[in-house]
Image 1 (cartoon, rainbow, N blue to C red):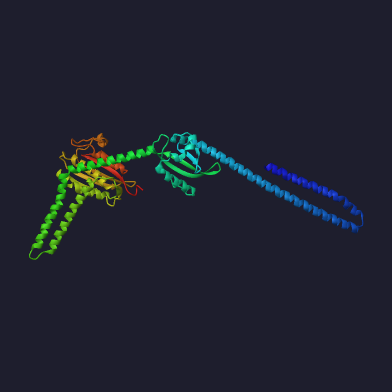
Image 2: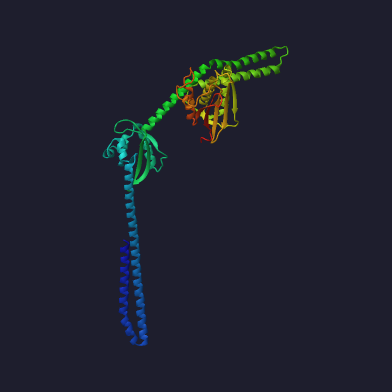
Length: 458
């Protein structure tokens, strides 16, 4: 095209040069004659001829200029035509590449113009159970589950109005086999074959949904087992817990009698009576707190995460198990770091982990004749990790048993169920932590678990 334009430009220049040469030759003779005439006549004739030459040259220049402008316009038209052809060729190449990639893609790809299907890849054929030709007749609407039709139409209308679907959305579809499948679908406005269309991609997530459902069922089973473990453990602690509750109640009764005696005097001692009443309120509050904690442990329900103060949970379990420890001549020592960050956890489940570890330590010291001491420590480790440990001075464990004791139904105790430590490890791991056991250098063993602080989990 550019060669043609240059040829036309050269031809125009040659025509102009030929016309100019002919014009000069035509006027050369009259000018020569004018030179032989009188000087005045010659000058007049020369001026006329000169003016004529200039006028004719101007006319030729204007003509050439017009030709050049036309040639330039023609050249621009040819450039635009060439660009359009290049764009069409690039579009065809792009569509060819898209088809080649789409045919290798594992997700179903459809191209829809809003009224009919324009294209479907091999994965769409396999996912739907229909051949490509059948898909063109069936269309995606025929395969959409009735409950998902409205959602899909809303998405199409939203895209048509120029909106952007923020992300993939889930919908149900029915392939040729008649079974209901779940798909993750995305719609994007595109240009196809030079026209506006919609790119629809579908990933079959039926197996993933079933796996999620199964995981949820397993979580529920785990929660039920944890509740059974708590209830069983609390049943075994009935005598100790009754004693723990009876202490503040008995103290409240004693303070109530003392208060009445101060008031029964001929001159009632209001100050002493007030102090007795205050002690009575504190004792009753303590009993109510114990009952409330017991109710939480017995309560059955789905795990509920919240910001939890680990130090507070440890202190609560020390209060609940103090009578059980005293019954076995075990002293409880706590070494708790101050200002520990809170963790995102289920409070009841953390109480259960501590209860299992503390009771295991108390039971491990039943047959020892040396000092029986249970030590609970908490400290801040690196990378936002809280480290909580329970150390006893009991019979200990062998290195071979360090991991084996966390297996379900494995127990070193004659009356043990082998579920406490297994459930405890599951709870800690569900909170993103670890639970392990190590034998002490002297007597006993140490059980340690980690929890991520609320800041570290963000």
